[in-house]
Length: 280
Image 1 (cartoon, rainbow, N blue to C red):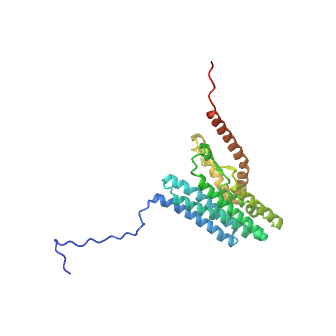
Image 2 (tube, helix red, strand yellow):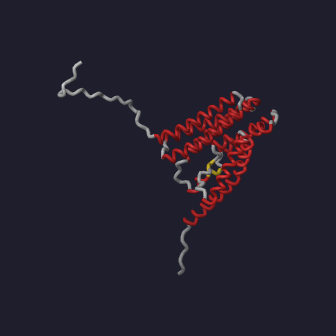
Image 3 (cartoon, rainbow, N blue to C red):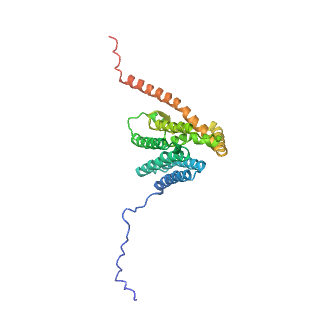
């Protein structure tokens, strides 16, 4: 076919771009990918629980907790926070820390209690959902004082997922034989952790930990390395220690929160107090 003469131009080809598919910066994609990986870890924990691979299921929930702690920091570091990411994170947290731990406990021992055991699982899942919903509502509260960022209201969902599995850690570590009475105690423990999650009891958040002082860097590095070695060598025993230590810190956080609240109230009272009349 002969070419067109130079004076005749070819019709411009219309470029087709699917509507709504715009270029999305990578800094918005990476945190959501990490969140989806955490969701996959939580769903995989449920699969391992069904297959009675309880220790592996615990490991999958721990991986989900680690990824959950990382995705938000990645989003803030990359300035890739978004409303979509926040909603996706809440949905993933509900599966990872509200559904997966409860099903793991049910498949392990609570199924022996039938309806009672299942009720404990439902209460735990509902408490996790309420905890996450309240967190989303309170996160943008403009009236909370600056020091409120040091505390969570209620036990955080990842912490609740790790702490609620304490009976399973003890059983796998010391091979304690199961009994109906012991299983009933485990169900009550699950309901108790659910109550801590849904309550307004303050818990230390750990988000306000600043930079490590230069003179303490070596010590902190050694402590972190030792903790990782112990966790890799004695994972279940370390999880028992971490769970008990976290529960023991609750009264400390309550006292600290009460002290800061009283100080804040005293400062507000001093500010609103009328000035003293001058001498005549």
